[in-house]
Length: 196
Length: 185
Image (cartoon, rainbow over the protein chains, first blue to last red):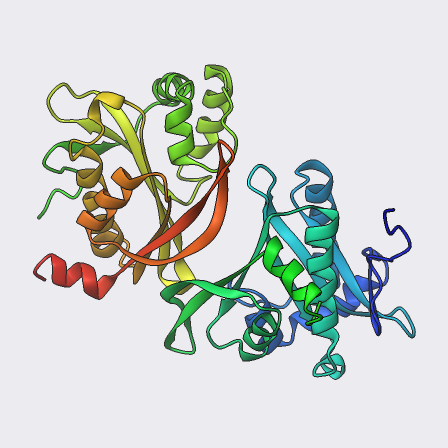
């Protein structure tokens, strides 16, 4: 019997939800002024975005989800008050090969270091494998993103490629590492009772 | 000065959308070519649709990648393309190459074109590195890239599903300093 009762978008302290086009632009605009967050979340040059620009980006995201069908985008909410604290997505899905690229970030500074990223990754993996039926997932991380590297390591991702000196920031060259996790590896991990 | 658009076997050109559309529509009917080039499913686009894509794609004002067509030097026949997409902030570029004319496979034309693309990347665009992806089932391309100076930087395990079998996607790269050394500079 299929376990319909398990809520795919609910975790202990957080949940995944849709974009709120009225309330969220101001919050995410604030995150885009956090240079450190931007440089961890994105490889393209960091730039602050006004709420109006964030609003336009949200519209483009939902348009892509609707038309290209290769993107699943979630806002991360705090369970206690449903406020926006981060975002998580599976992008560039290749349906014929069964791969998707994962990306997530906790934008609210006071919500970091509480295990929310771990809960979000756990939900994202369950969604990728149990709902989208992907064969594998990938994640690209800058060599300097130690928190994220620790997180994917905890979930048994394997470092698969290392783009030598692929990033140039603060006058230093850094490697861009790519990590992969197979569906079968995720299942083995669940069976052993590891971090889901 | 060096003619950066001319190699030993081929030259790099810019072509009219109509010319390229006809070639791409013909090459697109070769599913093996498609499977070597791209991990999306093969589809047979019409010449008209290709022309619409290309009118935008070949216009440098609308497309900021450096896309060249490849003509061989003996009969001046259009045999393929090679393109660089720079990520300026990081000094990296993706390179993509495809030769639709099968008579020119395995004879050094692709390696010659890739060598020109690398010289262009390092001596004209002044990049720091160049990156490409290639599929495990394409050993001819891997050998050609190695000859041009690329080295493997890792494998995305079992990334591709073709004919019911899983294959790795291989990432390769070359740094500016490696290219300079290789070319005696």
